[in-house]
Image (cartoon, rainbow, N blue to C red; front, side):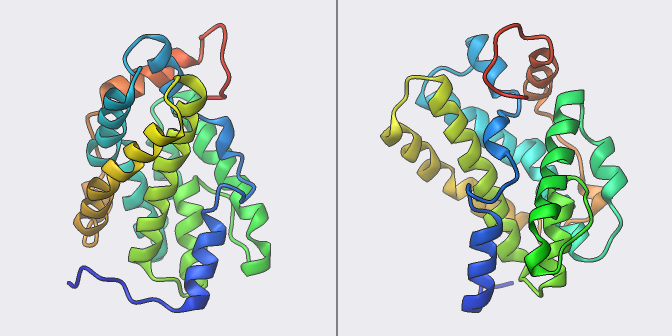
Length: 212
């Protein structure tokens, strides 16, 4: 398949809106366990943040989420599976509450049913005739950008360091979009155990800025 994605201007506008930081999903309130990882000293600088997010993309929840998005876009009923894949209470709340908010905000484009966030995004994209590959790519970038934004509030990195991390993640994002084009629910899985443990331990963290 070609590496380039041909899209219409209307499609691009919709995807930019749906996955904008300003779209009211409440994504800014979640760190995906990163807050605990920072407090535990696992992530504390540009290099460790890049490594943490790269692993999420290649081997962890970001990979699973983009597969779920693709399945939902193709009309598969993966809502229950997406909820069951959340390894902790906060991870489950994170994806379901954001998906619920996304569905509520999507009414001007025909709306979609509340579900885990990647499922809700995939369903809305399909109903609007949005290119699956474009949607997957934009979703991955939005997820990475949100955690970089969280890191900037947790670590004294600075905006330039955050932008360097986002730039460094581009190859991994592009590779995963391409690698999951033929993926199905049978390909779900991962081994980012530290990230899952971080999310579990965040549930009992005494002082915190984020909901996960």
